[in-house]
Image 1: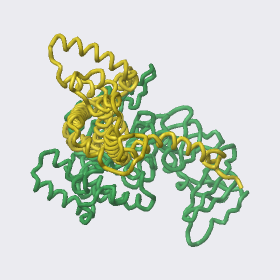
Image 2: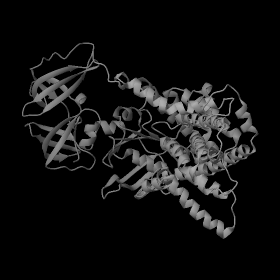
Image 3: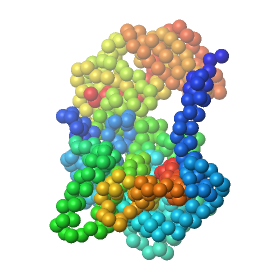
Image 4: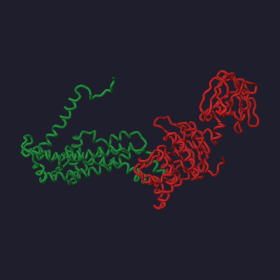
Length: 266
Length: 365
């Protein structure tokens, strides 16, 4: 009897799949397990304890870095989502014209340019500005994070807009809605899931960033990831595992929410 | 039917779609048509004939390259859709998925800035009109296709537009529901007294519902008339061919007099046929005869044409007789089946075809 071809029944498939999952998840599982180690080592198991979570919780440097990370992510995600929404509207609610594809590429530039290049470029430009203005506050980080978050917010919003039935906006206009009213009453309510998904993605991306942050930050502006990186250069205790575990939890929560929201059909 | 006051008038409307290359598409070519108040007017034609383009120009979703669209004498062609007292029922209904049935129906009035109480009252009235009172608070995704259709109608009628545009609104419904909605649409048009402009490619739908029909092809209106006009007296070959089945007979004009012409057919016989108003054809012409306007008779001198019976196809309500004409050509006769039984002809019989001058029509070509 002829059966449809399934790659899952091929010899070796299970082995290869398991091996890939093993490679992907073993380090993460190890990291999480040792977060609960009661000893000083990240390699020798001595017993179960929450002591490193407590220690991290009471660590002032961790507290400050966490708050800074969250503030930075919230600000960058909000502003980049706003910009991305306008960009998505401008690039979808128009008749195609020469140069439109170029504009997509232009908006998505941060996805294409190697992060280290952007980081070095920002470092050079910002250091000039620092000299001119004497200002060395958090605004540089806010600007940098907002900029590289834009394409991440843009993609789900644009996808949502492209899938939306254009006759709905036409129907609104037909029923005496001015363009602003049509946007407010029809487009925006239907776009919300895309906007929230874009915001969440931007938030996680900002929260997670090391390279650009490391180059742009001034003294005393550690975020959680750069703090962790700094710690690794000194004594490594399971405290870093505990921080990473909480971080992982937050990211997974955000990304899962993003997928659930994005899966709903317009 | 007599046309009362004019509601919509298209004057020399041309629409050219410029595509990215040099090739451009002339969707409408100098179209002029007058649609009366309280009229059920149908734009009929195959896909790509320009009927939907004309509807979109009236709605304001697109603007004409040239020409005017007058609503009660005022040119509305440059106005955006939200400034036109014209509403549309969309092919896919385009109901707002994030609103309830009631909110959908009230949307137009709300956008017009009507007070809340007035909107509520009108929504209740519209729900009653389309017999959906109990579904007011449902989501539009929770109701059936036929019910969505009614909500789309109620939503478009609620602001009391001067003209209602319907873009193939019945094409998504199954046969039985479509028949029901045809009657429903006629009823709504009678009760509201609003001008309906209905776009369809379905000739049967057009014939059963319309006061007048405009048959379109390739961006032009070929003929405007009542369903009976269009069916019984098609002016051009496309109209005769597109609507119903037709026999075409080729011949030469011998003489014309008093709205009739004597035609010498290529097959040898000479027949009389009706002429359109003011038509004075000469030379080669085409004559059309509807299959049910001719009858099958025994071969004799009385018959208009003669030939051999080639095939008999039984259809339940009627029977089709296919005759191979002497001198070339085929002719189909549709005979209503009656209680008394069949006509009594057999395949292969020599037969005659009988029709009068009023059943034959000379096409303008």
